[in-house]
Image (cartoon, rainbow, N blue to C red):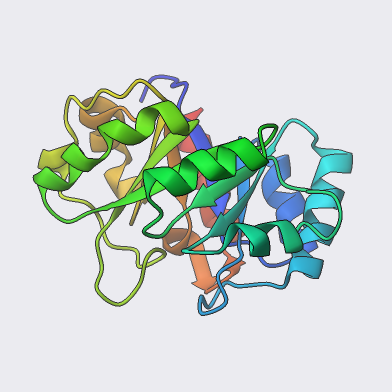
Length: 216
């Protein structure tokens, strides 16, 4: 496989130690889940500590706080004074008005919007959001959960996609799927979580390193 420029985000980290070890592997972004009913959820206090440590040692890595249908006031509250994240990733049913309001209130933090894709028609809902977010993330649809299910989007829907903003692919990304992703789908970035886990929130660092090495 030739060298690629595909970005990598490792999501759902829950410890300072793993965040630093994953950062050392050369990822572009690290995500922490701020959704209370997720098995990968950690508190605002712990999130801030991890992100501050990452900022000290790896300041160029994007620090992504993943929220879902969260009030903007609560996002502010969980900054605990000053934000330690560089990106807010919206992983729920947030509408365009929500994105506009969030952009207005936090102009210096990036906004990524996730969309769960069940059918090809779901892709048609994305275009109006492009002016109000910094990146688009496509995840698989699952009735039990909004993310982290390990299920893949049907590859047929993903070929020749074009957006005006960078787009990330999530959902069941593993080494076995990489050749097809890089050859036929060609996203700007890969958002990886459950496929490299020992248990929710605990990454298999060997698998993580193999996957990143495969891309480089």
